[in-house]
Image 1: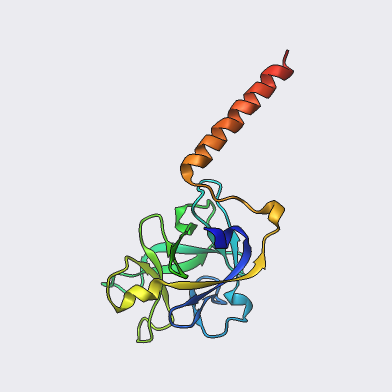
Image 2 (image 1 turned 120 degrees about the vertical axis):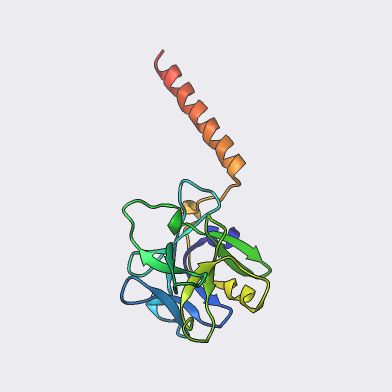
Length: 184
């Protein structure tokens, strides 16, 4: 997605006009009206294993993570946390999906990052869940504000998976050709 290719630091604003923030407990995430806080800034990283996913790193150096823990027992939404796993797995990778001028962040399992509404016990919390065609469908829409642009020389190119695979095969062939020519 183009908006992230050139971004190194972003801020995400929900449909509720609140920003995604990394809470100071360094474990949870939430929503806040103050987008100028350092806690509302997320560093964009690109995993090498995928050409369509991104990682979002908080000001605490931890990744936005889709956990398997239910937000409330008996309810559908799962907790979103900030974690620093030993191995970076698919739980810290999000696929940005454009919807008009907004973005939805999709997990590898088809669930979306959701800023919950104003009624307790959901108020101010962030979860991930499958969207439904109801009032909550808009809770998964985010505005992305680019705060810092990436150096154009260091900008990774997000390629469709098929093109990336072909490019990698060509690189392997070139390396083997160079080795065979230098060996003679």
